[in-house]
Image (cartoon, rainbow, N blue to C red; front, side, top):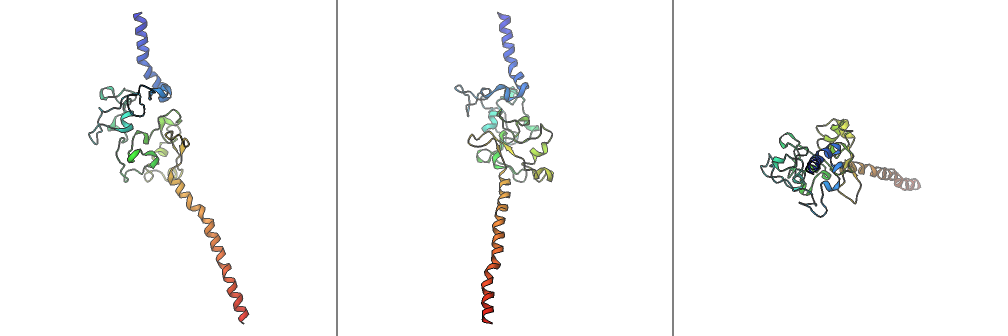
Length: 220
């Protein structure tokens, strides 16, 4: 019995690691992150938000969805579960209260409440996301990372890459589609639709001058 119990415990201990290796969040399923009736934090999260690890910039614990993500993706000694731990000192910034517009031009769809930039600014963690590393943009399995970077850093990116207008993935709004086109693209297309109306107005203007010419001929 002790051997069977020991084997069972070994399997359970190894399960999260093997599940992660098999496909990340896809393998653990919905209940790997959300607990229906036994939630430990906000948005019925299955793990407690990490309030132990400190933001190296602010020297304060993380908050919001970033703290929830770090409940798993941080070393166990720093309040996480040890699954693919993130090193804030060596990573792209996350958990920002606001974004410096001189550094990045972040689309509104990628920001959280109050303009916060969380982990969800770069990643959509739900299994419906087919993209590499759960990124919000298709990078052809990581071979076209410039397309991802250009969404927020268009001035720094190659012109051709920026002109492709990357489509953003989202699973956060059940009333919409799974993909969102950047709002900037929609604004650029709007003026083009008004062009035919202006052309018709210009073509109609000379027609109004015809009666005046006819009246002049009658006076002669």
